Image 1: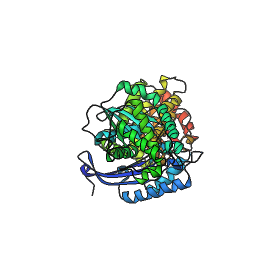
Image 2 (image 1 turned 90 degrees about the vertical axis):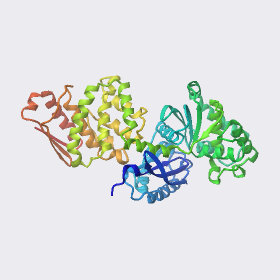
Image 3 (image 1 turned 30 degrees about the horizontal axis):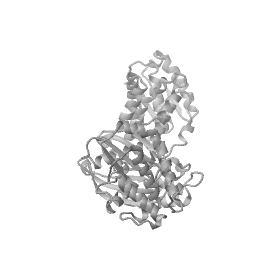
Image 4 (image 1 turned 90 degrees about the horizontal axis):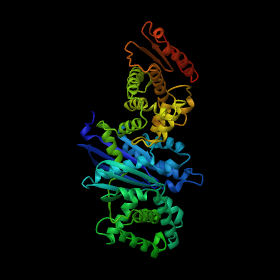
Length: 499
């Protein structure tokens, strides 16, 4: 029996640099009712070797955790589970190899998100968990390998930054042996302040009414601050100063005796304290509240939004196309034809899912963005802009897949572009690229035209187009383009026929 939308079970997994988190929840009237939370300390960031490869030991810890998560999720449909990797998987050179194993262990798709997308999702999770907080918010999330800082209001982000410092990376660099010295603390704080220098003035100028912290490091500091009686609510400069004094007095992380601090948090606590101290000093924060919501809750609410046809990716694509002044009329005609081709061929090519249809529509929106740079090689310019722009809501794999559609919408066609894609984004992308090329080609004259009489016959690795009698002779530009296209696709072992 189909689960009602008002009571559907969803799950979100955060493959963090220090810990893996999973949350399972029911959706009740657009809100989440948590059923289960699981957290495992896998210390992925600490498991990178000198060449930035995930070591076999760290990989096995992570895979064992994902097998456990997979057992808990057994039976949930694929579209009910969102799993994302963050800083360590962004940095690791062998992340593609690890992700193939990770997807098999979990039984569900896993994708890597950018630092800015991580910041957006963190803010979304915080905003929903602290909806009663009015005015502009500064949200800070200290992860294992990165720190996200977001200014936002209500459920919308205004500015987002992701800095290359975290509790694990800072602890490894300055407190790797567990020893705590004044010199190491001072050097750690100086480095963190240097990371913050580029955004300090901007964030202070724009201001906020409330500062909120999220995730493990800040939650741990908040618990210590209140449990030790150094703050009656949240974290203050005074409570941070007392924590730093306790660290200096202890001289070693294993000798730290602070109420509210778990043994599992000890190895990365000192680095996290120094990052947060630098944030407080650089931005002049007087008090920081602590949120229960973070990235994984943001993932859930992002899923809920998409299920109600509120997809932030649509807004990101619209903003992108406006920025590069694309021809809206041409976008619409190419998109209509691409969808018609897709609707006929999707079943035969086993690419019949809503996400792939969305991808085709987004490609139509942005495929001519490169014209803002130059008409010469504009498909290459456009692909670069798409792959490296900040497109909210897109994972790195999705953004790369979209860039490939833009890159391949004209001129030479090669299978090599699909080789580096992993996971669900790689499935059927070649077929999408072929359909998109044909849609663009049919609108070469940029005239509004419908193709009601066009017949299609999709084979396993072929496509036949049947035009109304005399149509090709009446449209010699399209006919010449199709002849050229047949040669381009033949080089990629795909047969295109038309009459």
